[in-house]
Image 1 (tube, one colour):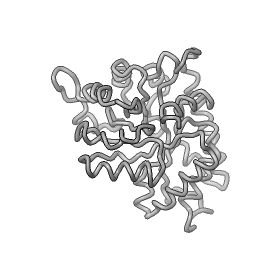
Image 2: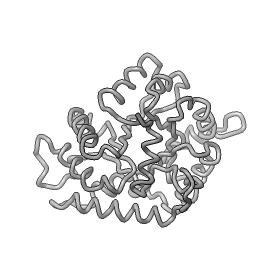
Image 3: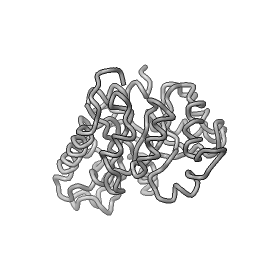
Image 4: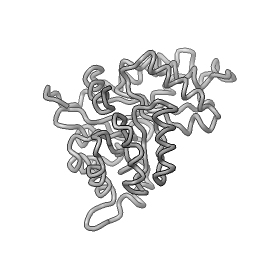
Length: 277
């Protein structure tokens, strides 16, 4: 069975895309014809997925948007749909879990067995033993929070620790913990200098990059700072700018158009080497 990083690398090539569509369903922003439907969240996300699947390297459902609406079953159904209709596209479950090992075992089962995700986002705050249960799934991936896109991330992530910033220490620890080769880091597009620093520390490790679109991250700066020598290595997430690009019955077509524009913009700034990525 291919590992997460193998599947992601294959998708970077096959789709010619570093774009990830984040699935953050907010029923208050759905088109009128979907509101009130019992399956509105699933129907909305399914339409977005089917309209954009050929343009993306991954989908990233954010678990809180489903759980707050008591729609965990719809999240399960959505991932089953992706597996059935678009099996080549990896699914990253955005859960940001972080707990002691015995509890982390259950969170890992939730992500990888209940939901069938290919990768999950995690907080490294509790240290290496809190990451180990996820590494037991040797073919699955995990992205550790490192330098996040929100302004408040600096409260901790920019603290000096032994002559370096905390986000730099997290990047170095991720290298040490990465015994399966399936770890990546979350680094916001809103901080291109820190993104470049993480890339320098972590070589070709995949970086999940939020902050493009509604949060104002710059595409050119993100590519200049974060891509690998082969023009890959990034999973550039956009959610609201794509999901809510249209409000009519053609919302999925409008989402596709927005995704196509963003992918094209990303690709304008990519290196085009043919060596392995």
